[in-house]
Length: 231
Image (cartoon, rainbow, N blue to C red; front, side, top):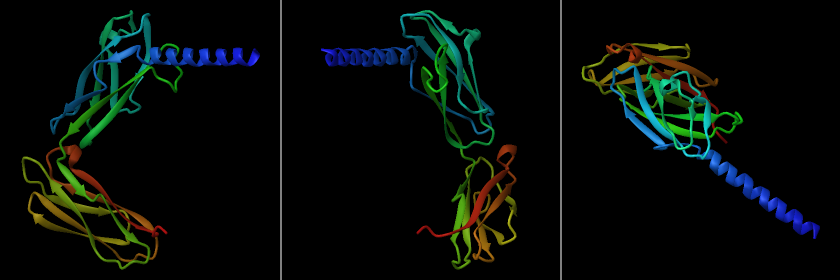
């Protein structure tokens, strides 16, 4: 009957689109879903090569590959973007470290010709481990609105081959005062921040200047804020 025919047609359509999606998703198959790299503390650019294979049964053409960040550049070896069925290739990914520290994950999306912008065919993650020369714990100090304006501290921890000293604290808001308290000279300091009043919500940027000999790490950024309590 008519309803049975409609049911069969809908079922067939669902299966067809599901199979198409599966084949489409696997057409660019990387050797791994996650590639990792460990950066040296003074490295400026981390470059790795990701091998992949056209796992489909037809020739594909790569339209674009992007990580959505100006800190990541993506290119294909020899500029090659067309691959026959079963053919392998190499995607080269370069990450500009800039002032990043700790673990950074960047996901590279790959589009083939015909892919909608919102549905790339494949993706792969580049994880970079960058030494943390200077850590702020915590990065943000908070006071509740109308709470006692007592001092709180950001601990500055230094993990570097040479002693590093704090030179200057800059505050963007006149409602706060600061003081540098050595914990272990050259290795750890407390930046003590005290609000003059907590009567008004507000944010203060806490600039921490050090004498480390790596320019990009010389200035660190913390925050102090007065917030309304969550009810």
